[in-house]
Image (cartoon, rainbow, N blue to C red; front, side, top):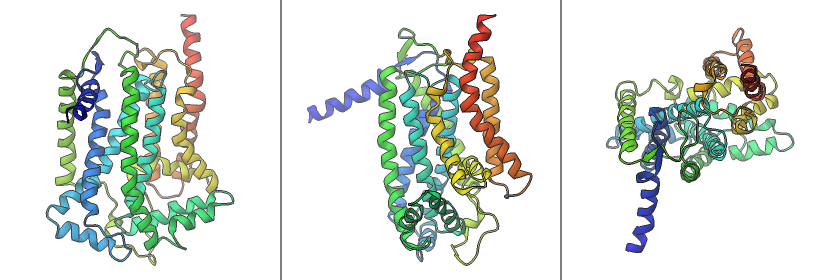
Length: 380
């Protein structure tokens, strides 16, 4: 028994207690820990919800009503899980924007960044198929629209759509498949998250100055563990506010109506955390082109370590980069707004301009900016 305990104690000691942590990191580094807390919450609540959920087209919506009304604290489980998805994306997006600001994607942490983008992609897939499970109006029609995009794949597109549907339309077989994937993916995300942390701890965490230092470090416990716990307390206050006061604010009203294939909603939109990518998809009038652009919007993030040409990591010492950093944040916010708007002018044009700038930022601005900064520094 002692032999079994010792490796576990060593892992905990090396990664949570005596792990050397840069002394100057601040609360922006809390988001990684908060993301792990969100993942744990989603897995635990998801397991308990799965005990009462029925993945059947005629019973799914009713089973959710049963959970809400008849299961002890079922309403709490569902609200935690439903709002927890939004909280998870809020934390992960902040975590990634912090990485963009402080250059956490550069070597030697480039593999950590790439793995993080893969985790984000799996999160998006998990959240999408989870959105289908309540079997409301937006679930049915959202699944119909998004899965139809796969038909744009040359030669095998129609076969892939039929396999996803399990038939000729989004129906009972689709719901069963999506439920299976939704239960499986969080465990894959958990495994990748552990690898993500293990690779990060090989070279150590970055810091706001963006410099490598093996001297100015202290143990993670108790200093930064206490800092993380404070962040968790503040996060749970924010999370609880939505759960107990505004539990349905982040969901679409049409999804509280049982799915009806004979009635099409006036405006089909995904959850808020998909809206920027949905806006990019809609900005191109060609189906295959839109799908490629949407997928590329995520993949291009993984290529960022190789697109970057700057030698200085932190934007604290890069005023020019700081300006463009805030422009890409504004661009993402605009795309999120456009994604929720009807497909009409002027929203189409604004979405196309924002989508073009999104790709220009990574393909042109980032590679050129590092060289321009070197040029300006040389003549300073």
